Length: 226
Image (cartoon, rainbow, N blue to C red; front, side):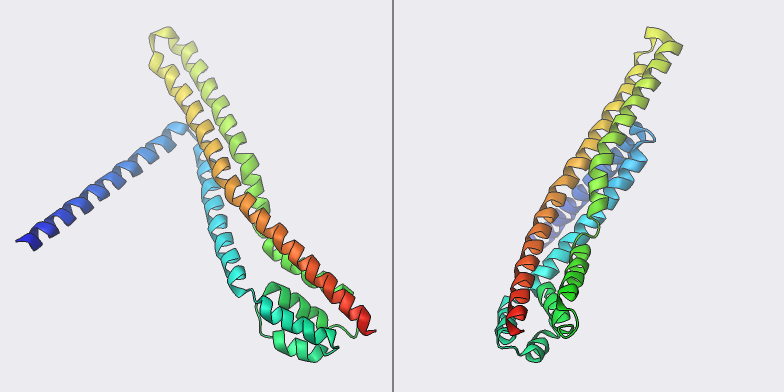
């Protein structure tokens, strides 16, 4: 009996949650419709921002997991001894971005190591910057789209006011509601985007400092071998 009561309670809770989600979905759709045509580009901006944010979080999680500073230190010990081939063999299969740069540089130590370091470092930085320009654009564009919605909403309000006079206040408040919804949506998207954007910038700057530090050490060690 207690088991059946538990099943009924669980079923009732699931039903309440599904009904709540359905109501939230309807209210969200109503909000989009009330906001007017500017809400559609804002919706696209929010989806793009969310997609890039998730992709970058996965990217940086993978980069952190692949870091192998112990192996990198072992490689530098071999480089200091002048054993470039041994160092290259140690890090050949690593997915650590610093080790990849060092390995690429070591593979060109007989021709132009410094150019190889610069090229590999630029490739890694470009890979880390992927999607950042789009997030930056959304941070700037979303509030501007919100302001555009505000302007069009006020235009609609005054247009209705001119047609119906003060006798129909609902016609005026509809346009003002459109103005407020788009402004709030634009600011919300910008605020929700700027937080992960700044986090990724910090990660990028830290990675750039690590690259500069390790490549400078590699250049110094290479000059000592000459």
